[in-house]
Length: 477
Image (cartoon, rainbow, N blue to C red; front, side, top):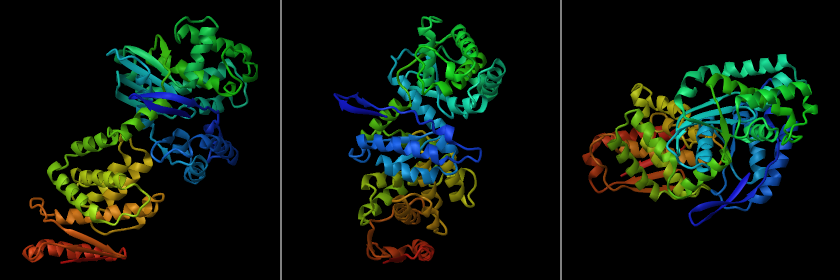
């Protein structure tokens, strides 16, 4: 955990806390987190929570990575984890983890215009990113981590040349699909991130096997030293802590494989990593430079959304939203932002087919690589898009965690009304008054307008029928 303060426009780190939980080691073959590792993680979060629990909502970001992406019982664990920490915890995709890692690395290095390969080894995944200065261009996340590889090949602690070769081969097989796009021909310098690569560099330099960074020769000498030790308990290497001994061999095998497959001649390790990337991404959200808004616009352009029509729907939705008596625990400005995004993307499914396009759009929103969005956030976006037309099914929102399970339904109703009022795609709807009394939603139009627009009247009658299935009554005059 890292805590920072914004001073003079710069982030100043004021506190760092670190504990080795090794969540990936507690993932069973059935992909469930064991009670023991859950308890270890919750106790850690309780301690971290003492430091951040009183910080205002929105100023803390906590993310889960590969193990929580893979665990079948992640959701039940996250409920307890959020209570322990006192703040929401997002599970991010591997590609989003790669983007945030690159952001953290880039902030710790001077801009030089050169193409960088950034490598980050975690407990259950390894990310590779190629970028220039602050801009990541190619991103990949492999299900290959120092904890998982160590458990698979060195679970009893024994280190033999045969096991090490198998571990390296295992890693090389995982790297094979990205070999062409990430090899030496596509970048100018290699940069490492994460504790594993930092420790590998320190060991090699402390032992005198390299003066500057990680080299192939230094890696070979490190591997020989591990084989000579024969067991993780006998690893007496400089800069290697006791808590990292059980997982360092798998980490070194991954580095070996990456150097072999991607033809890396030298790698230097940066100070920045995922945590620092989260800080700078959070800073953007707090100061209206939210990468998620750019992702939404890019997705709309990719699927050829009619931007003019989407803009009309958004403006109408905003007008209705301002009149809605908002009582949700979600901040009103945050809810308005989600309504804007849903309006901008509600027709992305049309690029696939008109029939059931709301379902196609929901699938895209839930499964696309959207920079800045967690999996949970993409599910919110997908639910809003799915619910914007045809039969209204509140059950799709029950799967969202509170308070989105209720707030999502309200935003969906507002979006539906905005879509209906703009169905002609040409005429801007008149100023509309919205009132809500219990389960009744009343729309009032300028005198005589609804009689002069019988198609809109018919559309609203149909919408009233759809909403009746959700125990909502829509009236209009």
